Image (spheres, helix red, strand yellow):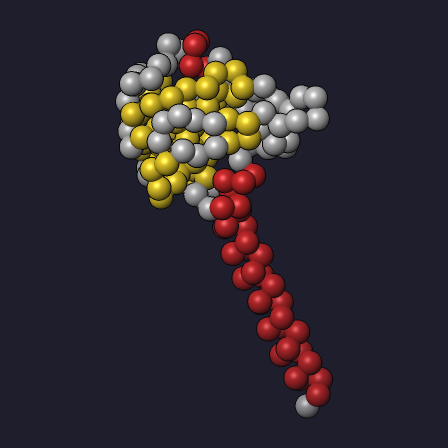
Length: 151
């Protein structure tokens, strides 16, 4: 009887760990979508959870040419960002609903024992991070509209 109980408890623990593993993976694995700005299609990872937002693109070596990360916020406000543990520079676009309201270009990575911080002056409810110089290369400017597919 003790042996059966031990086997049942072991199986229940394994099932619990299996479910927990996939639940954690789901929380950390961002959803993906596509954004269209002008005629450019950008593949984006959606940062919706606090964990995804705080991690952002940190500790990555690069980002594909037409890829980015879109941070989705419930509130329309000034969302400060910082380049913590970033390995490559970024363009950061602040978006109010579906219009670009502010752009920070070619934001440098960690330098001189200090993280670069971004303090916007426009309220936004979305923030898009792209490779540095992407906006200049594709003539993206404040006032351009975005279309989010698969939101």
